[in-house]
Image (cartoon, rainbow, N blue to C red; front, side, top):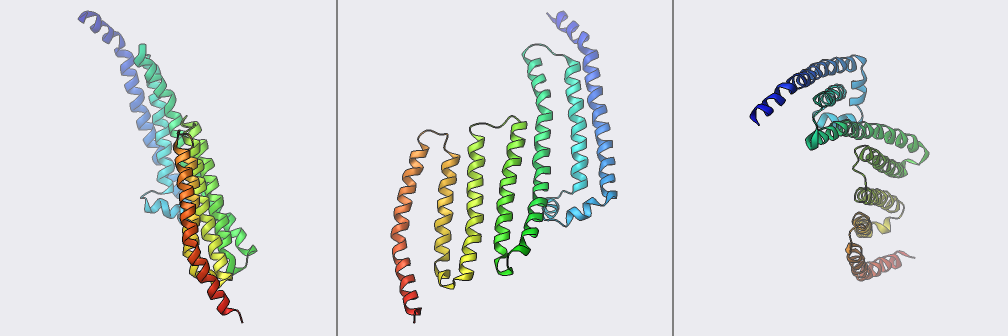
Length: 273
């Protein structure tokens, strides 16, 4: 048995050495190309204009910059290709071999999904800012929050699309992921709508300022409950629990609303000549 094992190792040595050489060459070439791409992006001047955007500022606060990111993606791409080639050269049979082949096939998907999320987020930030700046002149200056609200809604929707595309590429989509993204969109869009609408109403009707906080709390709670219902819709029994919570919450809000409405009506009656 030992001699058979030794002979198998000896026969596999050329493939093992070749795989190691491929990975080393891929690492060296990836590092070289990554640095070269990094310097090219810096010389092109794209990084300065990118740093002035909100997305660029977020990158800087996270300790990253555009040129380093593009260079890092280039390096990772070359290394992933070298690892895939090395696994193919090894040609290991059996369960372990099948597992390694599956990993090699999945690595490009994983890298592609990460790149789509990051690059897509950058493009979404550019597009949302462009649309927001384009819409602002349409509305009066006192209604600039409406343009901001529309920009935030567009950004939330586009980010959800980017996440769906990336997760589909990484084979992570399914019955658990789609409701999660739907709930995220509902909650995010609800908060953006609430802030914009409440501010627009209170700017035009000062008599609603005292109840603005209460209105925000109510709308936030409604969208949170709807979003939670969407997220946990695939779990058995959770929907009925959320429905019962919603009824209890609605009754409690109705009871709390009575004195608020009474005080608001009394105040409006006094102000009426």
